[in-house]
Length: 377
Ligand SMILES: Cc1ncc(COP(=O)(O)O)c(C=O)c1O
Image (tube, rainbow, N blue to C red):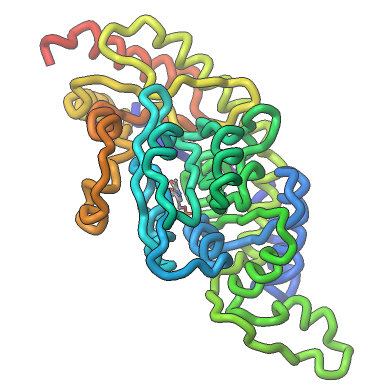
């Protein structure tokens, strides 16, 4: 058996949706993107959404739209994907790395408060693996400190914390539809916000900084000077296009069902793996109204375990080596003892919605074999 770690889930719906897009003489930034943005806002419960080409783009402009002074500081969890912290550097700001929680790998609220200085202007809350950060405490505290809160929701879509969807607690929510994510369009992303003024600026900077996007101009083509636009801001080419939006519309319709299946798979894993001696769950999974992207175990013989899985046809990986271990981020020194210790034991196992019961049983069997013979490895 060969089992992948992640796999996007498509069927004829997406193919039909793409065919529809091809029927229009328009594949760029057009009415499919507009429809997707409307659907997304309704689903997530936010006033405004912008279809983008990635979550990286969303993070970049969610910071850029605030026009922070150069070299100001942004609080970032030390254990996150490179793009979270890169968005800080793109804006000529500096990351302050914050440690993680022992029981769920998310940003540690006490350390967040400790690392705060008067130079801080924003914080990035990453719902790691899909586990919700403590958004009630974080947003209350951040408001008092006048910090902008950006939620990096690349690992979750539709998951809730205290009855409110992740990505709608802070000032901005950033989502990823990259190949391996909760829904997938190959590459893609979205940014949501309730702030109208910032939304308008974000829309402009996500498309060359123009005053009007091409679809608005096209729609008014019968008017005089329909072609006219101004370059008002230094913008980027970060928009989603109609081809990608056609897939996103179709995937979004399936999301509730996808999330039900994710919960079912995780419940099965947790039930079958609860009595292991040499493994623990890296996240204290709370499955109700959740959307988890990662199943992560902790074991002291992590690298031997990954190799054992490989020999048995099971893909696995490590999420993630802390950023301050990477050459680019070494100079942003910070005390992060929990992440330094924890990451060495982490291993992510296959989790995708087309994973079958017999594949889960096989993975569990191999984990149990390793656990039983642990001292021989
Ligand atoms: C936490 C986190 N943020 C941001 C991103 C970037 O997403 P994208 O590939 O859509 O730019 C990723 C990608 O895996 C991620 O894991």
